[in-house]
Length: 429
Ligand code: FAD
Image 1 (cartoon, protein in one colour):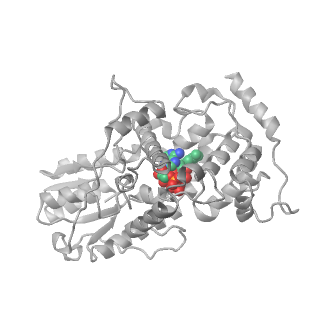
Image 2: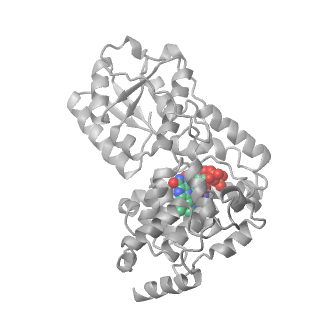
Image 3: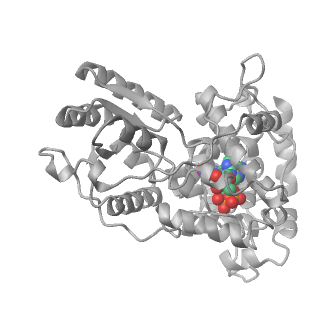
């Protein structure tokens, strides 16, 4: 198991159960991912694993190590004839899987069976008529919708289908650590399904109208569940078949998620470099003063209330509303003139839903350096954004309670002047 920590609608598990009398379900805790996941995502992962293990009557094997060592070792230990996984399209995941396949080849006659993915339409499937990838969302979206996907299938698994890891000597099994209780959103498939049902009943109908309002807090909060595969987007899409505006708007957001995964699939370097290399020459601030401004941004002490509210929500909870992600990202790039990848790195460190495809391309959108980018000369005005999307100031009041008192900092920059400065720098290139 990898980014598919659930039991229902899991083609890899269904195929494994069909292929063999008995299946060993295992998760390899890769130290490289432990290092880069950020504490919150690690806690969410551990909680998801614990739930799975409980539902499998203790038959989930968790080992720690490199998958290219651990998988061949386990294959050998149980005499497996095949390894079934959900396909992983991230640059890291692809390299890792290539190493696993090479190591399996050395073991002998065992087949590697990737099936399904965390997306409605897997990366690489939607293409222009000449086979080249889309660079613009809207035409991608049309073809994506026409491509379609299967309806969710239930996978039934019982303990008798599974090998009991405690029967395996030398399995390398580690105990799933006690969960830190720091995540605001409870992990696991059961919680994901419950949250989705609640969202459909209460907020889906009004989603189109209200999704940009951080003060209303009416979005689905499914992003972390989707990130870890506690739920598959097919399960969500199955409830979005009506023509209601809310359902259609929600489906479009799921398409954005697939689009960014597709972009990363075709241009893996866009994870950390400008997708549009024309922007490589822009003058960015990276000196000590820039470092201090970056610090103020991270701490939510820029003197711009909506920016500060978002950054504090992120630091305290690991979540930030989408509209505010756009505003804080734009502020870092256009008002502070810092490299977008600084901000993207901080987001990845903090976000519970931190995802290399959605995050990096969300940042490139804000910076104007990505596919389908907002024109680089469009600069968000943080005050105007606050008036429009937090009209009563409730969101700011929640996260920046000292706003309006002497304890609140003065603005660290003059928005109007920095807007001009950003345009001047873009003009240079
Ligand atoms: P909802 O509004 O309920 O949306 C439903 C689902 O649609 C989301 O869970 C998500 O899977 C998908 N979605 C919605 N908007 C987007 C989008 N713009 N791009 C891709 N998918 C989308 N999303 C992540 O999952 N991980 C990230 O690391 C991430 N980083 C971002 C960074 C920036 C700078 C920006 C502008 C956006 C980022 N997003 C990221 C997209 C979006 O902000 C979050 O998916 C959303 O806020 C999650 O809250 P929700 O589940 O309540 O969203």
